[in-house]
Image (cartoon, rainbow, N blue to C red; front, side, top):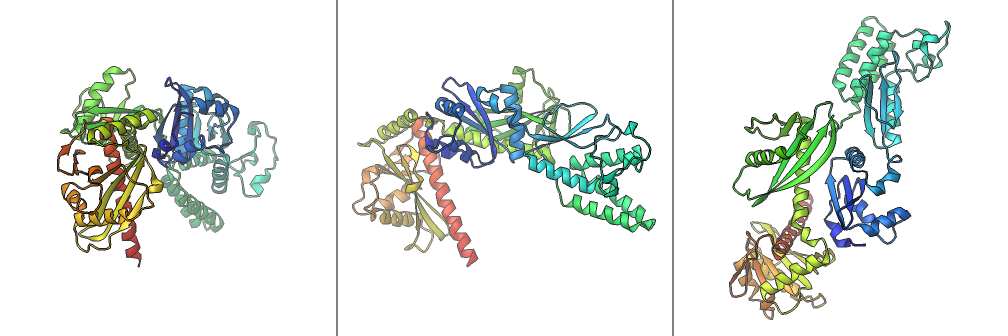
Amino acid sequence: MLINMKQLQSIPQKPGIYQFFDSKKKLLYIGKAKNLRSRVRSYFQSNSQLSPAKELMVKQIKDIKYTLVNNETEALLLEKAQIRKHQPPFNIDLKDDKNFLYLKIDLNNPFPQIETVRKFAPHNKVKYFGPYTNAGSVHRTAKLLKKIFPYRTCNRDLTKLPNGTVCLQYHLGRCSGPCEKKCTKKDYQEMVKQIMQFLAGDTKEVIKYLKAKMTQVSLDQNFESAKVYRDQIKAIESLQIKQSVILNQTINEDFISVYQEESKSYVNLFKVRQGKLWEQLNFTLLNTANHQTIDIINEFIEQYYPQTTDIPKNIIVAEMINNNDHALKVAKQGTKKRILDLGIVNAQAFAKQQQTSWQKDEQSANKALTQLQRGLQLPKPLKRIEVYDISNIQGIYAVGSMIVFTDGQPDKSQYRKFMIKTVKQADDPKMMKEVLGRRLQHKEWANPDLIILDGGKTQLNAVLKIPKINRKIVFALAKKHEILFTNDHQQLLFKKNSPAYLLIQQMRNEAHRFAISYYRQKHRQDMLQ
């Protein structure tokens, strides 16, 4: 196995699809998960019950990539599209078994049924609704449909039925009775139209239709039928069927989302084809520090689309851009806006992957640690690094945190939290001094090879006043640009995006995240008292 278990901790605990690659970047497998981190980690645990084929696959895995989605249904959709497109070798045996379900309505039949099928074969007069994540969900939907709409479930050829045919389902109140000629073709097809609107999520029109029918039968004093319509309306209002990945359209559209950082921007491109999310791509744009989002998107459009023949009808963006070469549309709300928002989440995840890509294997981590050790002129290898941060608002709910990196990896079992006890006002340097002083009292804790204070020179000056502290290993980190201050106030700056620079950046972000999470916890506790 070539994957470090600690690397798996960076995978989000969100739904999505994951992809396994070998040492030659060949795609081995595509899977889906409600919780990506949990699912991917399960392949590498010693007690995993894997098939022989999966065991062979795990031995070949060198790299992991993932795409975030909103829910399991979207994960299923994207998984199927990607498997169909790439056909990874370890997905072949599972392809048919993992097919999800659809509800099918064949409009070639004058009295169509509602069928449950696995095969998706689009046709002008055949309508599909789904996908559904499992057999239970599709059967529950079909059961609800049957309760609301009395469509037929039999396989009889209604054109050949003799006079006097009896429909048991009709007499039980479960069918509209077309085989007994209790329902005309026109009325049945009107009901099917309402069913399709219901399944497409257009419940507003269905309810409007049913209310009109309820009013009509009430005026005729047919109160039993009015009660049936009333119950149908209530049942529909209790259910919302929404699908944010499958769009109710046949045109092709691209969705472009951008996540900006100081000097780089990350683009997420969702390709929606025939109403389905077909592909997701990520790109990095350099030197974008002084550019607005609309300029970055426009530059991406100008550079990307001349290199592809896959030009969509529309390009969906969050803000209007002056570009005469492509049909651009702005999405401010609804499903398309949600897809753009999901693109930003994926762009952020991609940025995180890129920033920590140096951690892909042990050799790269060692390179970062060696570079950091030499740059700081420290005598020992950096086995244990401790980073400290303070979080408070005007001295209220003041907390300190210590995070630990062991061998260049976050070691969360060693993280510690400190509730500030001696400093009553907003004074970060004194708070930092208190935290370090209390930490040094724990002789049972392993000695650090490097201490980094997130806060700058004033925090450094305060901490250096602590008796018996090892001044040579204490450095302060400026709030911006990852500048380190030595105990004699010299400035050290590693080359941007170098392994040491990225390690410092990650440790600072982790320390800040941990301190903020503890601060919020204390704040919530006090609010509840």
